[in-house]
Image 1: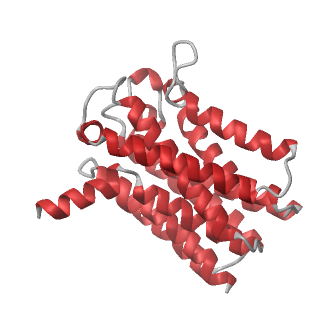
Image 2: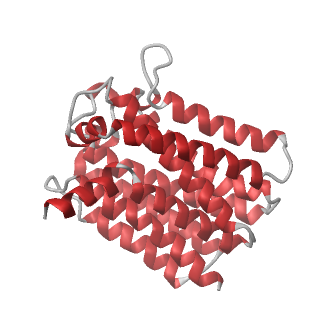
Length: 273
């Protein structure tokens, strides 16, 4: 049992689940829009996610109060520093190999994503992005949308009105919904000045907001590519969100909800075959 717990801690606290979900979803997006090198984009997204999430947590251990996650990060900080730096180097190599031609749009996408990731934890003035009212969830949703959806489309010149009016916004709404419910898990650590949705309307209505966002996301995804598998993947996420309660801990959020993101990617992969 202690061994299983240690493995589970590594999987959750080292952000392996969210990095895996980023890989699967990125590959799925590439497959469904017809990008031949979807595995390359999946690898880039996964390595970038691993680096950014662990880098942010390593920064937090010197600026936030302790908790199970940050205590684990502190005890394993040397491993995480090495793993994060290695993933950063590999992500950069992937990016260099993926870029077909350097253009202003691709540079802007990467710069915006990088700046958001840095300012999410490092204050610009008195507050970081995660401490600014209403900014936290949108910062997360925008970064995921730019890296996983927009970057491959622009870099591979896969552009259409249908894609940018339905598929891209649908994923922004999906990521926003997931980010919103994670604020429920952060209620115990977020200061009231942050004014997150759970702080304003409570857990019950936050879940309703997230489910509404996912339903809107489902409409946008279905408009671009109708698939019962994709509908099922979104519905599973809705069911998981509906099951959130005060008794749920990090495992429910980091393993189940983050893990369910990969189901959407798998649905794209299967429906593109």
